[in-house]
Image (cartoon, rainbow, N blue to C red):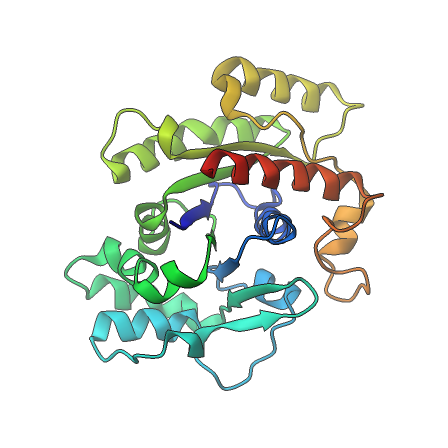
Length: 265
């Protein structure tokens, strides 16, 4: 049985897409079949995976076809493959900005992604489907992703505002899942951009562990230049870091991927 994980948080700039990429690459290193879905119209994940417009349909067309009822029987046409990372993905483009109106025309508007990714094709092909969500928590696309997901992975920057966003995100998720106990639906909280030399990073990490206990991944993601280089489109080092044994960032992400894979087994 596959697992759909939404990578989401209200605040931008916390390493959300970097987390989606590296967790996906880490799961692939653990011999898992992984599909990444770019749900952000900025398309950073798509670019980091090498996407160039190719005339083939993207996530926007996949959603439109589901809502309109004029659906292709070939879901494979939406999928690209990144040879460098060994990952399949469905890219985003600017058209995704207009998809909210399309979703609003569906009679069950918050179930569209669920109807797509719970289809037999995706369940049979992939162990993990990771949804890289936009940052706003109150739009239909994020609601779809949260409703569709089996688990929520929260990347939390090691600073106070990011920490303060967590209760709202959890309340939103509990409302969508119609539960008062969110724990079974959480992959956990992964602290990103952690600087062990600053009191702020240490205080936020400690506060998270005090508040949420074992839901917090034990190894935070360090704030190092290699992480910034890995997501710079113009840098030859652009890509995931989990294969680099000398990379502290990569090894922290790999440890997180191992925990996710272990929790699912």
